[in-house]
Length: 127
Image 1: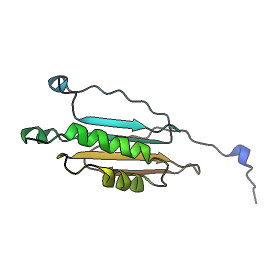
Image 2: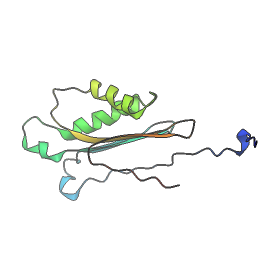
Image 3: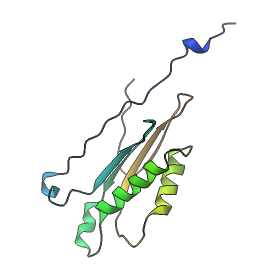
């Protein structure tokens, strides 16, 4: 039987960065997308706000997606991306009309990666 010491086990890191560049047609309004990277850099999220809401008076997908990602960041200490997203969703002001895709990814201390994806956003993993 082979015994592995902790010093031989590989520890993974989540290396991420983000920059927000709205579509050229949406620069004046700032676009409707958002993201966060948690302070401990173990949790990241992106939201792609649905621009079609701009046709409806009082709707604001930009605020919706930014608020959702802000609340996800505040709750990034929760165990799973699904729990983070659920808690953030329930903190939203439902008077603000809008919708967004959402993708939350969390790297746990045991080197497991968990992901919650609502909508058509995607994630690539490079190792």
